[in-house]
Amino acid sequence: MTGHPVFAAVYDRLTRSAERNFLGAHRAWLGARATKRVLDLGAGTGANFPFVSADAEIIAAEPDPYMLERARRRAEALGRAVTFLPDAAESLSLETASVDAALATLVLCTVDDPARALGEIRRVLRPGGRLLFLEHVRLDHPVWGRVQDVVSPLWRVLCAGCHPNRDTVAAIRRAGFAIGDLERYAFGPIPGPLFVRGEAFPA
Image (cartoon, rainbow, N blue to C red; front, top):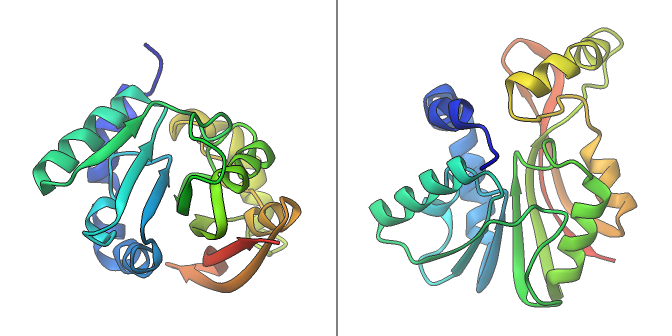
């Protein structure tokens, strides 16, 4: 069994303050737009589940078995019916054009191959479907951006493969999506926008 048992065990505690003060509001914004049949990509511990409309069908794809088990427990605690898939983002077992929305929250920083993952998202989205994303990105700052580059190898080891220095917005556009709504947010004392939130549609 592969995965990150320690990171999965502490993830919710590590992010509790950020979820309460920042991330939760953005998950709510995204969840309100995730309707009908929704793919929660890299669902982690299931942090998006409470924010997705109760009448939407959730399919949670999460390759880390330790994260997946915690997501199952969260769904049970919420009384929420969720279909779980042990799929990596780059290789989804869903049929082509089979979901109405794809949620990607703090996951495109972690996938091994962002271009392939985004290609899979395009494949499984139905015509008119949307990608809803919340990600942290490389800072457009001469010092802090370079700091992200330098710490990236160690950060990936400590944080279950997370790359702190990806230009995810550019990757989404390169994958053939048109971004219809995009907001950038600073976080804490770090200068410049560290987070991006938005929705994108296959062009």
